[in-house]
Length: 238
Ligand SMILES: Nc1ncnc2c1ncn2[C@@H]1O[C@H](COP(=O)(O)OP(=O)(O)O)[C@@H](O)[C@H]1O
Ligand SMILES: [Mg+2]
Image (tube, rainbow, N blue to C red; front, side, top):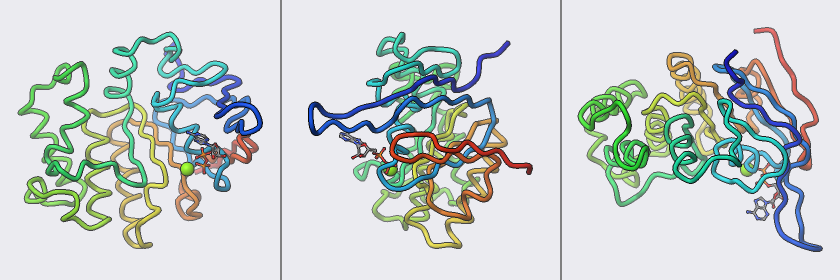
């Protein structure tokens, strides 16, 4: 049997010590299968970003069990963790996290450059570049954007670059923290159409932290967090 993509039991995360200690996540149980789509919602401070950072193997300071594709994160060494982050997981942050000093092509190549200490296994640089250009076209940007720097692009264009970058290595898990937060309605809808379509094409599971009711409504499964606890895990008929 293939292991669940995400398997978490009594997952917890606390920050700080003594009176300033914050229990950001408490005893969370979660299973996510390959290709599932989920919205993660809840008030500010509920622990949504904390959860996403743990699921993305960006933060190892957790209590309980957290397995991604069958591997307990606490059991992995630094090299295995970065391989997992680069080959299995794609991120799209609200702030896009594009490096301003690099042009779009270099930003797209960044995760691939870190994967496996320099060269992504099974993909030579020219193949990666071809895929990067293909993805740019796929997200509706023309090839001339590749030579521009993030600050020369609009918010919507930057978001599309961030999405193309996250998808470059066909991650099994695509994590998005408020991906439409800084976009107007029309752009937000177009970006979301793309996320769903490309995730489906790649077979990626899609987890989207969002406050946007229209984004939530489109997902077959919705997690609701409050004060670090998973209060509801709703599945809907499509
Ligand atoms: N690195 C950190 N250091 C200290 N406290 C943190 C840190 N990250 C998050 N927190 C706290 O954990 C709680 C949950 O935060 P967060 O996961 O960012 O919430 P959300 O994304 O739902 O708004 C908040 O009380 C926040 O202040
Ligand atoms: Mg947050």
